[in-house]
Image (tube, rainbow, N blue to C red; front, top):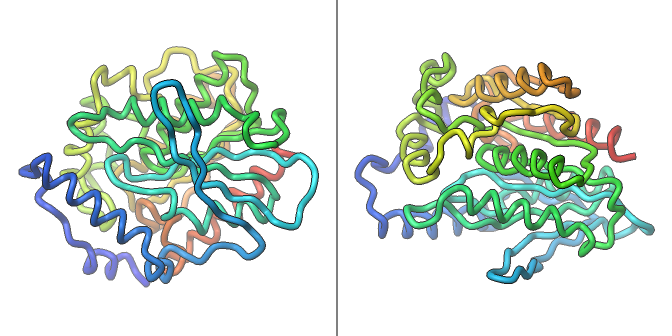
Length: 305
């Protein structure tokens, strides 16, 4: 199915006038849709031989739901991949069952997908970042090999994963890899100056008005929450940055990969011409999703052996 059809199917709310109550209702409706079994005709069916279930990470002040994917027919300590879904102010780990389960099955590995707090006028993006980090630093809870751990995030989840990789370095937690798919890593005022932002301002899966709405809720200190502007990006885990080219934030992924490389990190960038934002969650509509899946699994397999 083409990007043109995706555009025809899209129903864009009026982001500029959305109230808090309307946002709450939108989140509930959208996440029910993303979790519905019928949506798998678009988002893909889980891999066979993987058990999928909800668990809770209990913290002193809250609990964080996580969706855990375990390959059924394996023994011994497996590597761990901590995954963060996209959406920011919407989204659920369920929308990523296809990619998360296939990563679990094909590596094999335990994949833990973080159901972080969603951004709202009362919940800044830093809350989602904290949820992702708290899940990552509790690697001992999953019965995995603590020497073989990676992070993997999509869109706003890419920002959470990138920040977790930075915090892991600072805390002495050695990661083997980070995978960032169409990452949104710049929430400063400069975020709207990239050529891709202008060229794909009305893309089918992400628009500039939507990004303006998200940024208005997400940020306190704009540079502090933006991995692209972190001082000192050396000594981070090897990165795979996956860039769909028909995406407003395509240039953010490219810019972050360039900064990682300039800091001396191993970086691989793959581009998918014509693919829209969030294409990895639409394998039955966007064929490049399967190519990206193969790239991600190959990259992780080499680094988690």
